[in-house]
Image (cartoon, rainbow, N blue to C red):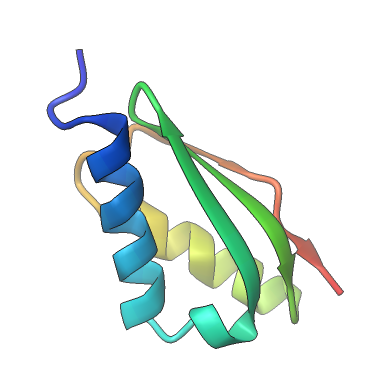
Length: 72
């Protein structure tokens, strides 16, 4: 059982991505299900894909990541 709701977890990850300055690097969609975050969309580089993954993993409640981001 998740410690927080999927909606709250997705919101925390979205906030962290914004704080880390990644929002301007492309279109990143965040979804959460049972503690696993799915990142989708297009960003400017492979470096941004990795940075978004690290941002999501910095949230303690994140149990896993499915990173489907693509670099343009």
